[in-house]
Every structure is written in structure tokens, then in C-alpha cells.
Image (tube, one colour):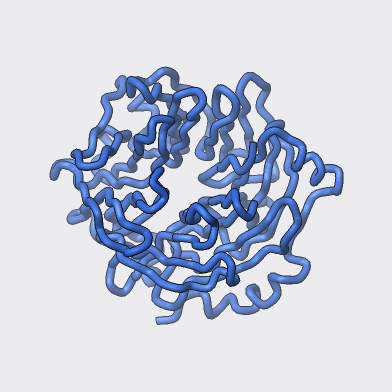
Length: 366
């Protein structure tokens, strides 16, 4: 079958001219001077998709059009470029430079693949690694793209699991940690989850240079419907992961865990009230390494929960309607919602009612 890539060639051809919608020169200058900026995808109530760069004050500094709804964003400090990936089963990603030194670049995965919404750059910014679906073979893949040659795809290797979602680069610069969610999907069946009775999520470590599998860890059999989805690294280098549960809605399995090389996955205990507030669904995860905290958000539960990374204990739980995007800011977290809200540490929230902020928020400078 043909993927939606073929139907969107006109978008790819037109993307080079008049594609970016930047803010005013004054706002652009503010983006360069501000202490931090944050990138996120959005949907406009009036129609259309895009990605925006926000200031710490919640102002929109820069925006770029997207052909479809976006999902995760990754950033390369070397080139100062960000890449926003589409939500599955999208096939077109967009690289942009909010400082306007370079024009946006669009690129696509080949036929037989679609993106899973996340990616990460190599330490030197030369390569981009993206989670992908080999959907006819129900196999997770990592696509490798040359970031210095228009994001041409130059290789791929398996994730040794089904439904890979987020991936990140460990501190050694060569090891990729990948969350295989375990859920089989196929574009022919839309968003249908095809294997819930037999799904097997896993957490894997792969050498990004050789593609070799270094470690693979699963969950206990009774938790085989606990889909591992998102990850981040705390100040000590420990990788945390978070989950979405596909079993009975009355179950309350643990949703947050930690991973250490050579050891079984550790699932953390949570107070019942905090666990109930997440409604078996964590949509995003972010570390504040300076503060020693980790936050998880749940748009299904209208709440976000903050952990102390040293002890693994919950230190706060907050209500916020449709919250999902979350990123470190000063001693706390900035959070965005599907209701257009932007919550800031120690400051009144900002409302952008024309915008539906998408799942993820990434701090890209400062």
C-alpha cells in the first residue's frame, strides 16, 4: 500500500517558500534575549496545524506551519534547530530554526514506514534518530537521518519490539534508550490497537552506531498491558519511564518507573490519591535536573504529579484541565494544555484560547 506521503508531495514542494510564519521582529529579538524558550506543537481552533516557540512569559515568539498534527519536538544545541514529528501515523517531519538563520526543512520517511512522534539528535547534531513503524511487519524501527544533508534517510535498525514511542540518548553519547509501547497498529486500521490481548511492552538499550541490542527488559506478565511510552533522565543519569495502561479501567497499576543498566525495571509506589488522579494514562514526562524533580502529566486525569528524584517519592499533585505538555522552568515546571492554558511557576497562568497545545513541551534554550 502507499502511505500518505504520496498524497502530500505538493506540501513538500511548497514548503521552502513562505512556509514559516515568524512573529514580529521585536518578538524575534525577545526570543534571543529571553532566559529560556519552549517549543510545542498546536492545533488552531480556526483550522490548521503548527509548531510554536513560547517565551517563559507564555508569549508566542515564532510559529511554523505543519501539514498534519504534530507531537514531539527534539532540539539540537549544535545547530540550534528543532525537529517536530507528526503523531502516528504521520510521515512528514519539519526541522526549523527559531532564530531565523535557516529556513524550515521538511522531510519524510519512506513508503512502508511512519513516524511514532519522537526523535533525538546525535551529540554532534550530524544524525537524527526517529522511532518508526514497519507496519506491514509489525516491527519497531529506528530511522537514521543525515541532518547535514536535508535529513536524508541513511539507515535504520530494529527496536526489538512493537510500537516504539519515545527514545533518548544516554549520557555516554552512544546508547539509545527506547520505550517499546507494545501496541501494534497499522495505517489501514486507523488508530485501532490490534494486539491488546498479547501486547508485550519493553525497554531496550541499543548502540546507535552499530545498531546492536545491548539490553532488553520487560514487565511482569500480569502487567503486559502496561504500555511504556515516555522517558527522561534525572540529574544522576538515571532513566525514568512512564506508562499508559490498556487493561481494565478499574485497575490501578503503577505508572512510573526507573531503569538502571543490568537491572530489572523498578516500578515506583505512589499514593492512591495521586495514582487515581492520573487515570491510568501519562501523556508526558520531564525532568527538572536543577531542582531534582520529575513531573508526569495526564490529560485524561486533568492533573500532573511531581516526584523527588532522589527518593522516588511524590512531592506534589496539581489539577489542570487537559494538561499534557510539561517542561522544566526555574525551580518548577511550565505546563500547557489542550484548553489553551500555559501554567508557569510562581506566576499567573496565561490563556491562548485559539490554540490547542499538543502533547509535548520542550525547553530549547536557556
